[in-house]
Length: 160
Length: 174
Image: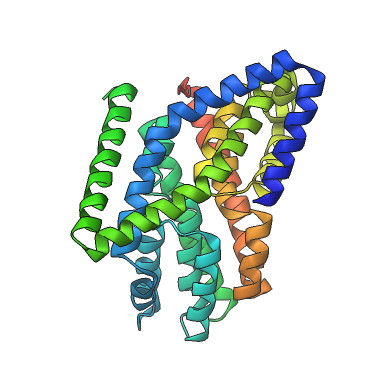
């Protein structure tokens, strides 16, 4: 996060030195795009706040720690797609679950869908790419997550 | 529904949520208070990331020539375009929500659809700091398997999807 701030500051200063006119144009574009996407952003944040409160991390742990690993993978895909969780919460949670004996394949399904399938980011993605593309892209990511889970199961000897 | 109407819909939802949180605090309704707090802290985090990201997008728009993007990420770029999408995705910060506006500005500068989709999918999957963090909790083996399996699959699927859509004359509009 600090890196991003520094990079932005350097880029902005360099741009200002090179041309004030172009920098002003750039800031105008930034402001316009930002304002344009803000409503969808706020909507996404509301959905996020509601889901994370109704589905806290300890509920996720219970959901993922199922007896049957295939049921676990499916449940993991659903919860991973439905929730938005920053990495600094998600990975320590996955690490703890791994120690409790949750299979690698279940955690792979969870973390991959968490990061690349977004039900909550749907409004935002749709705003840019339209609903058809959004659904197809998310479906592809879901399929990829399932394949990753199977590969993980094979590598760590959890299938067969 | 028109984009304008959808925007109004989201603002209405946010306003309704604001009223709900406010009344939750007045009535000491705990889940409602919790939702309000989560909303507030997440908004704060995003409000430090988003302005930076959009300023960089604006600078990119003004300074980077269309020919440069077209050459490396556009129609004739072949595999090189996908190589760039892996590299760009690996160095992005935030989540999907920051990848969308970046992808959109790349598209406007002439990047082809397959590369755009690969970039979005990969920015969820192969961010470098995130992967290192993951490896420290789940083991390097786990992260290696995940990356080795998912990167080629995402690139392949995006390339196919991009080709189909381009053949149909699909265009992204804001």
